Length: 515
Ligand SMILES: Nc1ncnc2c1ncn2[C@@H]1O[C@H](COP(=O)(O)OP(=O)(O)OP(=O)(O)O)[C@@H](O)[C@H]1O
Ligand SMILES: [Mg+2]
Image (tube, rainbow, N blue to C red; front, side, top):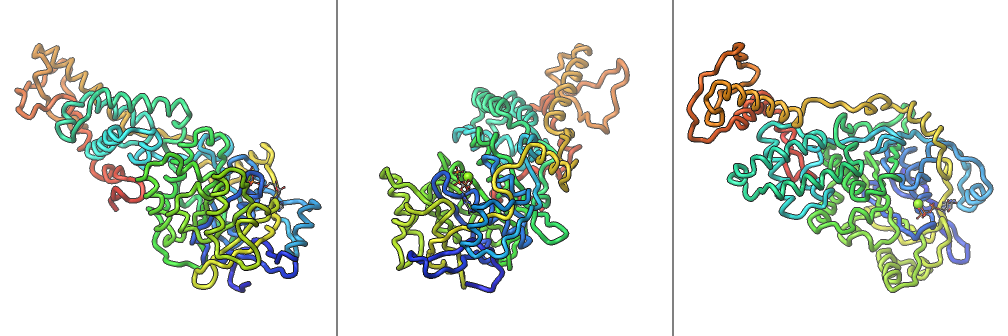
């Protein structure tokens, strides 16, 4: 037991019920990450709910995904149902108050919450390649594409920007190959087709502006409570790769934007990663390494990451080792893999002489869990068989009408609801193609066989040709500069380098962001 600021999780007992003590999560170790596991229907979502409530009450903003919609009730005040009141008595939660929480609903598809968007350049080539399941060779081309966009000042905001850039690269495959290595038309074509599939799956909504401002998920209310951002993820779940990529992006974004804080009194933000196995399923080793790295490093930015998943084996060992606060609900142990999962889960706890961990895991009741949290000096507490407290907010989903009302009242209403489509790679390349075509036509008109000739820069500062006038044709220089290239360079000049800097973004700082 502790007097330090903490979140009440529930009450543990000895097997004979003789002794009961409060199990708490110390806020000062809230950024040491956590894990909530258990078979379906064992109480994971409710455990997530009471943890989110606790963090919010402590002034810590929370971001969590709502896979089945049943977490949304956290926005409404709970009601005194008999089984909840009884449980409150069992865990000695007195008084058992009901409360509604400050919620901001988000939805990548913009239906059940404010739209969340990221720009293509923020997403970066690594995550995009993962999202599109590209081969190594294709990923190489994606890297080149980002580099070219950066060098040539082409803003990559939405999917049509990326499509336009890829089309442009396909056209210039030969020249680009000479500079960067193998880029062929067919390989670029394959990426373009994958992009189309992604678009058809609805991912286009996600890319563009206004992009999510991290500050908006780190809000607190005037009365000092942390906002709980609830991401509607039921539809998103149908595209697990998008879900995983999005959450990874968000983590990397937090990592890049937040300052170092060392070990704060309480976390700056807590992140619940439901269905966390999706993050690691089929993930290439390099990505798992990155996740491991970001989980390790993000702690010093005051961000706690809590993975929620059915099976502890879903989480790679290196990541598992970093999750200090554990809530293990019941697991089944019928198949060998299940038995293995039970053993693994049991072994990760600091043993309690009162019971056998592995046996207990298979016997836990609904809403009961083995709990171990970090206590003094960050040492894991001895595992306790714990009855989890009932939530103060509503158990189960809210109605669509309640949701719409809350969306209308949220602090970000109007900020993200309309897409902004400013000039970016797509428009720039389109304009350049048009300009190139016009120049070509003009040259043709002049009877000079335009393709042989280059034209001087025709950026904004260039006076428009006189009506019917002719440019003085210059002989084709030896550097093979084509009309299109000249056009691109003029755009680079006009856009300037500040845009270029913004483009160099990658996950987890692997590509440095110019500051
Ligand atoms: N701490 C608790 N207090 C009161 N009731 C609880 C508690 N935990 C679980 N329950 C009861 O058990 C039900 C199932 O719990 P929950 O939805 O959290 O399971 P789950 O592990 O998330 O399941 P799934 O894997 O299907 O998402 C709840 O709807 C609630 O009735
Ligand atoms: Mg659940």
